[in-house]
Image (tube, rainbow, N blue to C red; front, side, top):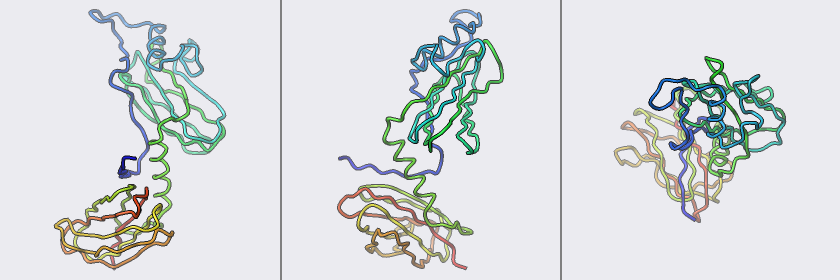
Length: 260
């Protein structure tokens, strides 16, 4: 199995469709005729590769598609396409969670990963103009394991090394092979906090960005306990290095906390 490194940015998992996705247009090539509502509906359906009468597709009564369903817990992908307008915003309502608004432009297909706890979900589109603009939404099970892995990692990291402390610098990574990540800390005295999950143990060390040893390599067990150690940075920047035992996929959370 090919080793892969995942450096986590704590942000939503979101991406647009391929560049070859159909581009919505308000004018016919070589002319200035505006597309009709029916033509925009057809373009939305083509972009999403579904029938125009599918749930969530635009209709005369609901030109900006809306979908309300009850779902089993799981990982899903929301897709949306629009035509006849520059862009729209997809609104996602899951139970009592805050509403999520995701804007995108009509020259691409929006794809948004959602981890749903089960129960009702409502997906709708909001546009600055009405007909002839059209927009549609659809929902399908997620089939990309990387998206689920990213969400797993984000949820795990959010629970670790709490609470957040004033002035802290934090990072996270996941890998089955040696990996490293830097934190742009200013010179000073810090406490290193480190936690791993996956391998039985990892070799852990910290160096400065100039290559000087800050914390010598040591074996840290991945048993749920947080490793802590005082360190002194004489120059700006710290590089955290991790080597999991036996090539086991392992995730890491770490931070530098300024000493008083």
